[in-house]
Each structure stands twice: as C-alpha cells, then as structure tokens.
Image 1 (cartoon, rainbow, N blue to C red):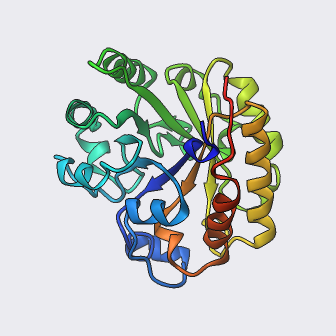
Image 2: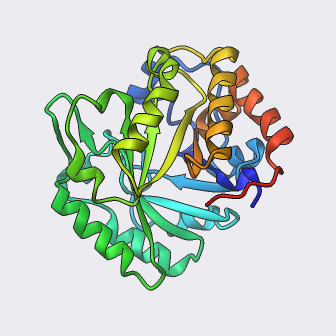
Length: 269
C-alpha cells in the first residue's frame, strides 16, 4: 500500500471552526473547503466524517454523496462535545449502519469526545460501547469502532471503555503534550495491546489557541512517519479540512510532505 493510504482527514463542515464557540480558538483566515476538498488539497484519501455542533443531522445521505470519492469513510457514532443531541437522545449508530449498507466505502464508526475528564466519566457506558461494537461487527460488511483519546486522560482509568473498541485515535491537544507525543504514544500502545492505533495530527494548536510552529509540524510528521514505518501505528488522522485553506504554514507543510512521501510503499503487518 501507499503511505498516503494510511492518512485520514478529520472531516467537519466548512467554516465551523471559525464560528460560534469555536471562534475562541482564534483561527486566522477563512475556511471554505469541506472534507473532500480539504483532503484532496492535502493528498489524503480517507475520511473520518464527524458531526460537529450537531451538524449534519440524520439522515446523512446528502453528506455521504459528497464522500463517495474517498477510499474509506468512518462516520461518527458520537459527535463532538457540542453535539448535544448525542447526549439527549443517544448515538447515531442506526444511521451509521444505514450509511454503511448504502455506501460501500463506509468501514466503521468513531466516538468523538466520549470521555468527560472533569467528572471522570463518559457520555456512554462500557456496556453501551460493547452494544455498539457488536452491532457494527455484525453488520453485512463488518465495521470497526474507534474512539478519541487525549493525552490529558492518562490519569483516569478508562480501561473498560478502551477494551470495548477496535481502534484508538490518540491526540496531543497543546504544545506541552505534543512535545511528549512519542512517550505518550508508546504509553497508549502498551496500555492497549491488540488494538489498532492511530496518531491524531492537528494542523492548528487548539489548546494554546495559536498556529502550530513549523518545528512542531515537522516534529510530529517525523514521529508519525517513523511509527508508521515501524508498524507501531496503522494510520494518521489529520485535523482538519477546516484548517487546510487558511493560509497557515502547517497545512502547507503537510501538503508538500504528502507530495514527497505519499506514494512511498508501506508494508503494514
């Protein structure tokens, strides 16, 4: 397989990181690229399409039509923390299953912002996750279940939740955490043997509300490249199309990096 085949865009609707509560991140420029446009610009063939602030609402057909050119799509079973319908009326599992039956490139579901560190609990129980995983695994085309795990969560024991999923996406929210990314990635990998691990790659420093430096971008790409080559991770998830066309240095670095490395052959176990 090509190296680029291991890359995913974390897909949100265009402009959503510049408006509402997300305006507090102070992202410069303007974002008009949706998930497909941003991924195409960056050279990324796969998509995690994640509900943000409740958008889109089911049915997802109109959005899935825009995603048909992706090789693989993971739809959110649980949207981000601002997607309150997932708190009040449950998950979007039934809709994800329906999308998978209609669109063969849908290969699984992801739980975004599952954990609530302030209260040391989660939006769903471990039993909920086992139920969701069983439904996905027994779909006509077997589907995977992933979740989002942040570096700040290590001090809380979320083992029962981690055991219930197939894939763990690991994210460093700010500069301090990114500097520890190698140690932390090794830690989550050792904590969760037998799981698929994916490195989350931010194109903006949301935690510190400022652009990533070129040094930080180069650091994380060098690290994830090495971990891919060593077989420690199965992929890299890039957040997000909402940054791709803002004129910042980080997405332009990634774009050139993908031009240089994306077509390299990679043999994953």
